[in-house]
Image 1 (cartoon, rainbow, N blue to C red):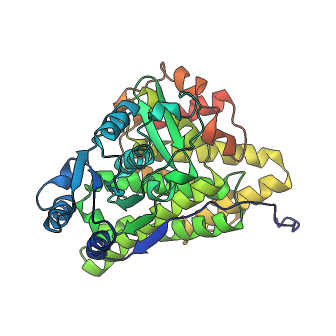
Image 2 (tube, rainbow, N blue to C red):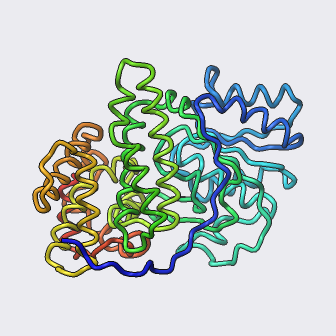
Length: 402
């Protein structure tokens, strides 16, 4: 049922980095670095990407050939405050740029390191919720992001997520941490293992869906989130095809969708899936993409059931968005309101079963240790969820994700 039109609510849109996109564009990146940074640079990569045959190794060799001093550090797994501080202390204060080549964890670490090198301060001075709460009034190094997975959208956000397993998973967040340049080369995704590619891609889709339906969405984030979801639809199938042109299209669509998800979450926030994923990541060694994938269908179902009971204009508007997503994921299905919403849950469950089949029980979550997740989930992303879900609803969603 259509709702009455209303004026556009006031909103703000955060700054964005310069984005360079294209198949094989990493070769132009090398020329860009040589032309703009002739002195000291820092390169942060994952372990594999620095090996021979990978782009990190090629990049190091090209910079060395140009006599550009490079400090290279490896970040493995989710970064901790201690790891960030340790790398910062080894970096030259007059570093010209900090380059991050890798997935979301590498980019988050690089973002924090770039922000702290000139001041040589500790990230614990600024980390939300657990730090000293000091204002971030210091100089930073330019941060250049080169994602090799299509997931968190860290390359287009201003927050670096750091964690200490068993204690917390929190953000270091400031406009000055935003990347100056983002280089999106879809060909780099070919180096990503399929299992990781699926998990990170589902995280990106979750971010797009949540930022599209969040309480803080606006016309600009809606447009970008919808474009991102449209790009995501069918991308995995294209990547898995035997046709090289289809594969290239799939990789291209996926990496762009992920970067758009970073822009939309930075401006519209997220919802209950990520509200739960934060404390899960703090207390369990569970891959973030898998967590989001397993929670997406049950949380969406809880949201829809609660919205259907609300019977107000805002609820109708959000339900209409869920119906649009359902039609996107299952275009051949009959599109009547209640049936369409049921079809959406079915589509999300199918995505999960096909591309993230491992339940959260494989990472230590059980029906008996979920209380710590519930007790620590009410801040941050949870505040943007389109409806307030009760603790029993959240607990049921977690149990379904096991």
